[in-house]
Image (cartoon, rainbow, N blue to C red; front, side, top):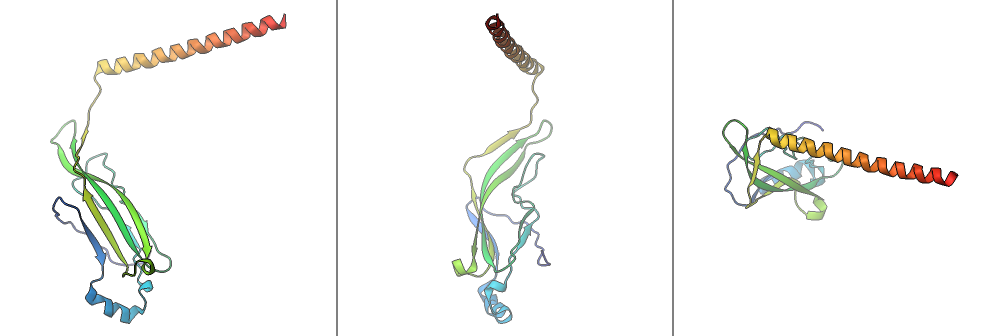
Length: 177
């Protein structure tokens, strides 16, 4: 991907659905059309290095981080639909972290399909349900109970396999006589 704008920043938004976008204003349309002649010449390829909605915690995955959308010809209208879930992360040690996780869907349409100037839109909706992620360790008694269950299961399956093999070899030996 060639050179272009490198945008970084942060913003505070109300806890209601909304959007933010990277697009031309109406005043810039005439100037750009005088230079490029056709909106298909405006390339909105982009690389999302990082996007998050709050503080990070160790196992948090932001699915749009590292997302690359490269257009080889023509131009289009990218839309990302983000579902933001408020999250409380409780580490073993330290204070809880109040942050957000998100999932997304994306939609791309050419500028001819939507009859709009090329742009990249992020539509977000905040979930009314909160997720709680808690770090924890299993107690020794829970670990030992799980270990005994695994060992018991292995012995049970081994005993069933041994019984089947014994019966099959006994039946095979009685037919040969």
